[in-house]
Length: 282
Image 1: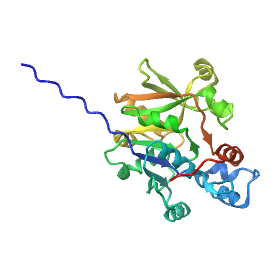
Image 2: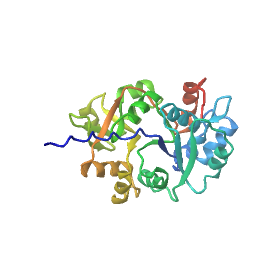
Image 3: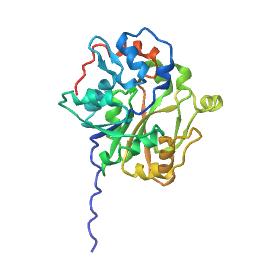
């Protein structure tokens, strides 16, 4: 007599998001002033891209980022910040939220994106979670597709559509990591800083990474297992490669949409225009 097989347990829907907000904002601090108001210039001088106030409401950029995460069903948000980021803590301490809870993890030094993810270990526990940049505003439809993916996953943005629908110029997109996949849409390799020949080989619709991931707690062992890159940092790209080499499938979810980028002072006006009239709902 055969024993009926047990139904496979489906992974729970992720509810947690980690926002990497520890960056030094070097480019933002060093650039010459664009047409910024006094408060925007103050925030730019601090290098706090995520806290850039936008429009007449003055709501910081990161509140728009969190709104999209909440719209995608992510209700527990952890900001990875530096020990010096009292301004960020104070802002959210005085903020009333209805849809999300906001907590903090401290990355003691700016040692890279994998180190930032590792700083959120206690917040994550045994749950699956989404990781995003603090200076990128991702489309909610893409976030929902990411959340619905099985296991580990990442968004792969069509390079041509990213240029057409974003405030990101083609030359910047050409430097983004290219995602190589197999027939099952599983990640095979991430080509960082691709050469012009590699960019041409993969064509205008190559899928590129915008650091938007879905992980399980296995990512922490991966972060602990990698060495520093040539830049002297622990890179999330290397941790993802470690997962793939260890045999864990990482699904690449293709996206033909844009992402708003808040990398420098010149980006502020375009982001303000794109987000004008968008309601912040935390």
